[in-house]
Length: 301
Image 1: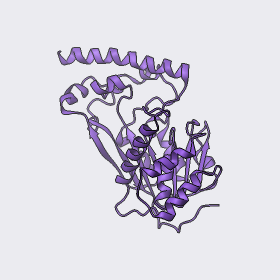
Image 2: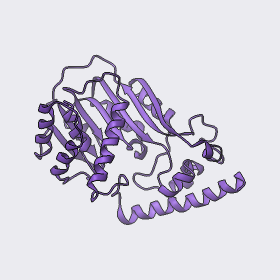
Image 3: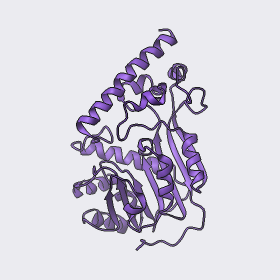
Image 4: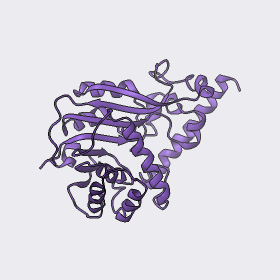
């Protein structure tokens, strides 16, 4: 098929998927943060272990979790990452979200997750099990608010590590989220945010990963719903972090468009995406350091 005809086909099909996503959200709301159902605990465990490994891979070399206070933004359906952070010696873990998707999670699931994660000292692993099995502990916190007011939901806590996975691409105003995140960062805080930049609808993302970038802003926003990908690119996230006062800001690509799809995926994009140097990046990690000497460990009052 000629490139022009293929681009036209993908544009028309993409509009159909945008409409389907909009309609699904109107009917069901936001209920599935990833493709693994809660009824599939083994799948959930494999997914969490993979995500946790990715977060650790992008942390600074030699970063020691022991005694650290960790914040996770938008953990989705599980606080499993928090249990793993605690198993590696983190002093506390707190998660905040817009939707209460992890509420009521079975504490027994955390035990099964730890059974599949052999790392960490025995005392830290026992502490992680105890905290995960006790509701309402400040050391294993969870707060939900539709306004996503990060300082308010942090409830006076300050953090040494702030992480997220597949969250920032769903924020309507990532720059404001980064500015709010900065208010709860201790001097010396590290940030690791894994960001998925590609089309999210499963069928078309395999055939046209840049599909969401084919549409002018007014047309794309015609199908807007909470959590719709915001279409920000790596340079946008880096700029927002620097503006908020973070240093050593980088976006490290994890995957790029398959060479067989690259030429067609970079054709026919709407302004301002056409010609951008980073349009072949599918996902990666935004990492940054908050300037200042890291403080002593301790759970903020």
